[in-house]
Amino acid sequence: MPLALRGFLFTLIPIWVLGLAGLWLIPMHSHHWVPPVVRWLGLFARWDSAWYYHIADIGYWRTAAYAFSPLYPVLMRGLHDATGLPLVLSGELLGWAADLAALALLVRLWREEAGEVVARRALWLLLAYPAA
Image (cartoon, rainbow, N blue to C red):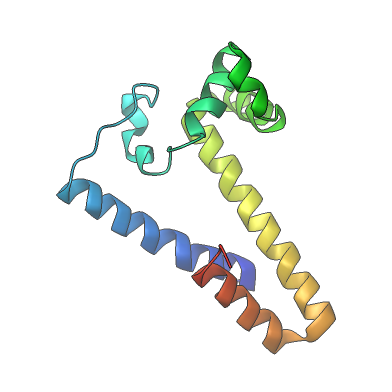
């Protein structure tokens, strides 16, 4: 399994399990725009997700929405139209795919510039603290 995919799954799955356990222990309000069939995704659908969801659903409906780039909502809508998946799930899948692609490109860059050992360390450090 490629290093980037291994790191991605190694961090996403525990975060998801812990988040769902937290929602079970401390129920949170789900957003009205998250369909009931994907309420479990409400864990990830926070902050600016509502803006992107509404732009993908109805377009730029008010001036404040212009602060958000149209590429992500267009891709969300395209995936939704092509597959029939809920918009929220389409957005999550696109976000995860972009994350995995970025990790794969970074690992490739680190390998070329500094070698395998540095690439592995850099990946795990990035995944451990992505804001660094």
